[in-house]
Each structure stands twice: as structure tokens, then as C-alpha cells.
Length: 88
Image (tube, rainbow, N blue to C red; front, side, top):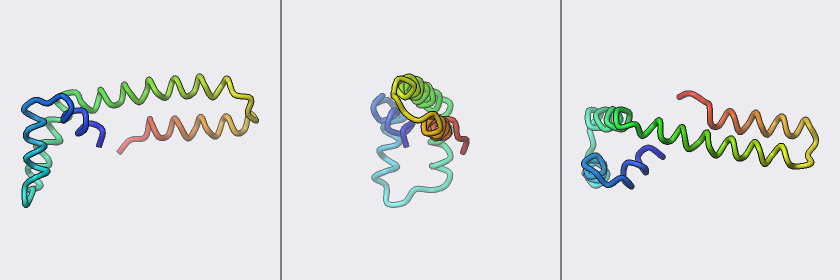
């Protein structure tokens, strides 16, 4: 996932823990939960969301400049917003 990639790029203690988990023979649910919590508390999810919003804003601006049928523009905008704004 993108938060994991960003944490690995940051190359701190969390990155080392993630690398260890990826190379371990087995990873427990507790380890996954702990790493997920660290990604959350480290702000990586927020960073990903901010990056996605930036790309969404640029994409929507570009889309509005295209000479597409208005119904196609609406559908593409809805799809782009869904991808960025969906909740898991």
C-alpha cells in the first residue's frame, strides 16, 4: 500500500520494522496490527490522502479543460472522486 511505500522511503525505525516483517518467515496478526497502528500514528495515511487530493484536483481541472460530452465529464469526475474519497 502507499502508506507502507512512504514509510519505507522515509527510511526510519518503522521502515526497518516493515522490512523485517516482509522478510520474516511468518508474520503474526499482532505484528500487522502494530505496524498498521504505527503507520496511522506516523501520519502516513494522512500524507497519502493529501497526495491523492492534490492529484485529484489536478485531474479534475484537466478534465474540465477537455472538450468532452458533459455526461462523460460527470461520470469521469464521479469515478475519480470515488477512487480518492472511498472509505475502507
